[in-house]
Image 1 (spheres, one colour):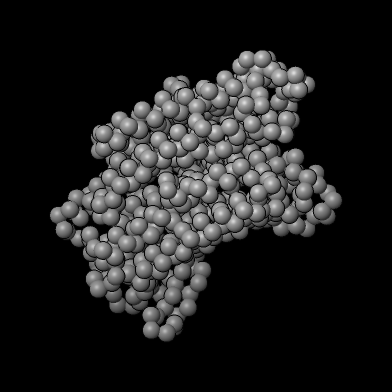
Image 2 (spheres, helix red, strand yellow):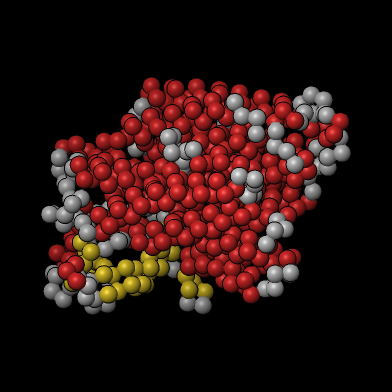
Length: 551
């Protein structure tokens, strides 16, 4: 499917539009703060429009997560082509982007959350020009990760995201911002190094053929039509890496159930698990959330955490299905530990932001458990949970930002009785809290239910433990609701004002999405159903072959 404007495809527009906005912002005088804010808001609003166009024109019945024909809105161009490089021959790296049922939901989520976070950034007064320039660069990095089909391009966008986030926390954050920013940077960089090593090992293991026009053919396609006039090269193409027939027989990662394949899978897993963040790689998250300004916390929880689980589904599972099968129980166990640990630690918090940060560890554990099930129900629930957690947790952090702007404290024990003082604020808070604890009728319930249904088919005992965690989640959410909103209001908070129109514009659309998808989730589930069916079948088929020792 093609959709272009001025000869540029829609995926390139939605990815690089923030870079255009960044250039515009950098050209503006720094004292024109309102103009900078409105320019940034316009760019992110256009992204939402483009995401809506993608949704409207997306073919819900098209599957094929491991083939170029199964991808939609594909754009391809030669990016780096060096035809004579030492002993390993031609280096051909493509600019290759496309989306399927897995990535379209993440593209929509990124556009929506970036728009909402821009509105939330209206109160930023320190170095406004620098802040919005970095914010828009971060937007491009996140969007690029979700549309890339070339591992080299994926890695570039992954690293592009790291730099602006470091400065956005380190410059505009709270009192311990430098510590939180450095910790975030080092954790993520460590994971990136492991990912880079796995990427290089895959590059030198996968062969494809290239014709005179620069078109890539798999080994099977080349053998079928004849290799005369074709050149054999290594590739970073993620789709080519998913085809076992493209692995050179004598390469490091050829075959199935080998030690090197398991090591490569673990390396990728650690890189992605740090970003999720899964236990025990989670310790950077509470510090980053507490010190980050509110809109960056929204981006961090709403989008960045999903990049880890997306990486596992896009790269690790289909490229290493044998290793996925081998480590499935361990992955499910880490998911359950994250759920239980995150819920218990959240219950002990007195800082509003820290509580939500640890709740994110718990809720992303649901995603990990659903993915590990290796069936359509669990994987669909996991991807839907990624989307729902993005909208719900964005609401929660925005809610914290609203009260912090007024009271300049996040202490849960400092409040009480806000329901009468701030009724609109309280109503939105109730929606977000009950969605987070998985109340039927709200979006969080549907995705958690699908994740647990899928997981129960594979890991019954672990799923029972995970289901009990819902009670812990209800415990700390309701206790927080009680401490902040019920009872009598302290004298010093009797002048607090309710949410204003700008804050309602941020929060109400998210609340509407949470309620609508809780009642009628099909608009999102239909987008991913065909792709998740195909991915689950691909993983299960390859896992069966791996158990039989068949390549």
